[in-house]
Length: 319
Image 1 (tube, rainbow, N blue to C red):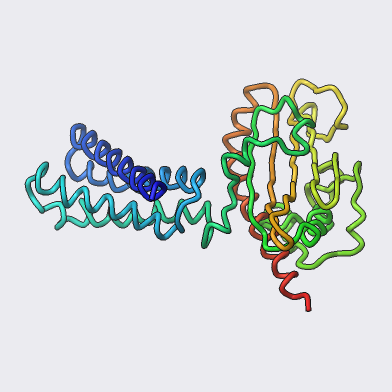
Image 2: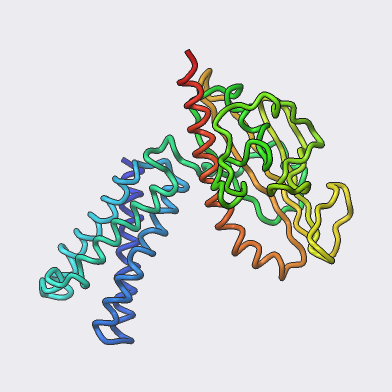
């Protein structure tokens, strides 16, 4: 009951912000323009709040979240705005005034929740708040990190079944299991365990791009529990990889990418992935966060979903 009321509260805040947007727009522009501004802002507002709710709170499925957001907005407009504020039901005769925003609010909130949770809560690719705050292996490798993100997904397979998929990652190896056209030269990532790639050791480099020697250095490896990778690049005089222990140059990026397998049962595992990064100088860090942050989130989501599908599919295929 508490989570349902909290979801309704999120939807009520979305309705209030949409109303404030409409009121402000009507005070500054003609009605037609105000309606257009409201129609554009409504899904952004609803989607943002639905994202926060789905991100931090283990709530109902995305379809329910979208329905609650829509239901609260319709109820407030029909029970308060139309009869008491507008004193007219004309708003319900206007597609742009009512029905287009209603549809966009539902799509925005449902789509944002679906982005986080997938078809159901078991597909959540974001870590919980507790998981984001806990210490993980590999954290000490980049203690000065200014940008830390944690993602996670539950896999219906044992740690031992997931581990081989992790240690064979890398371009010119098994791929990264993400959007192969962007990070694997268009070559499909492996859909099977490759025996000759299972000997990965600390000190090995997992190439970042096809045909390159630079990439992620294996910093820690403890089977079948955690795999910590590190990338350390300078930006001047040219882009080049550095040894992990080298003193930082004037312009650089230093980051760790850690995969942790936490057993939830004999055939159930929580896969946590944490990135910790530092870019200097600060004026280079700002555009890096604005561009690489969203790009990494998209790529990481795809990787987690593909790792889940491969590990679970391999388990179901076993006789």
